[in-house]
Length: 336
Image (cartoon, rainbow, N blue to C red; front, top):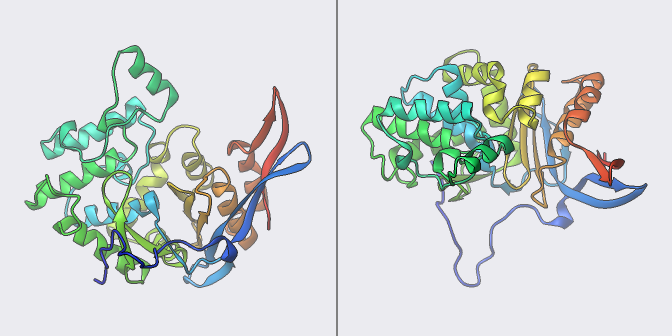
C-alpha cells in the first residue's frame, strides 16, 4: 500500500487539504423570512452502478478526510480478520451511535466477546449523544465514559479482532499495527486509489484522506457485494438501521425508510448507496452536516435512484426548517 502516513508538514511546506472555496460549488442555502441567510459550499459526486461519474459538483477529485464515513472500510477489515459478530454487533462496528442504553449494551457485548472492558477502549470519554440517555446519566450522577463515545462500537470491534488474531490491544490505534495496516489495504482495494495522506481521527484512530470519487466508489462496492463480509455488513445495516445512528436521526431514517445505506462523517461528510448500486459522496466545506443528507438524497433523486416522491417524503424528517419564535419562517434547500 502507498499511504504516506503524514500527520504534519515541515516549515514552508504547503498544507494538504480539501478543495478551497474558489473550486467548490454552492450546494445549499438557508432561508429566513424570504432572505437567504447562509450558503453552504462544498463538493459532491454521484456514481452510477458501474462506478462511473454521473454528476460532479465542485471539486470531488480533491482529497477529504472521510471521518466516520471511513467506518464501513474499517468494519469490513475487522470482519475479514475472522471475527464472528451478530447483525447488530456488525452495525455497531460501523456506527456513529447516539449511546442509547441499547447501543451501550451492544458495545459491552462485543467487549465481553473479547474478554475486555470499557477501560480497554482507546476512544476518548464522552457524554451520550442521545438527549434522554444523557439526562439519565446525569440523574444517576454519572459522567463521561469511552463507551458513550459515538465510535465506541468501532473500537470494541477492533479490539475483538486484535484478541482473535493475537495482536496487541494496547497499540491497536498505531498506524503500524497489523489491524491498521489491514484497514489501509482494504481502503485502497475498495476505493481503487492509493492513500494520499493519513491523520488522526477524533476518536484516535488513523483516518485516511481520499477523494470523494474514491469514497463513493468504495461505498458503492460494499453496497453491491453479493457475498462475504461486505454483504454481511450491508445486510446488517439495512436490518438494524437504529444501531448505526439512533431513533429519529438522519442516517437511521434514511436506512429504514428508503433501504439506502447511509453514513455520516464529522466535518460535513456524507455517503449513501442505493439498492440499484448508485452511490453519492458529499463534503460540506464549512463542516456542517445540516444540509448533507438533503444534498445526497436530492442527487440520488435526480439520477432516479430514489423517486421524487420518496425525496419529498423524507424532507420533513431531516430537521430542515428555520424557526422564528414558534413559527417556521424558512428552510434549508439545495442550490442545484
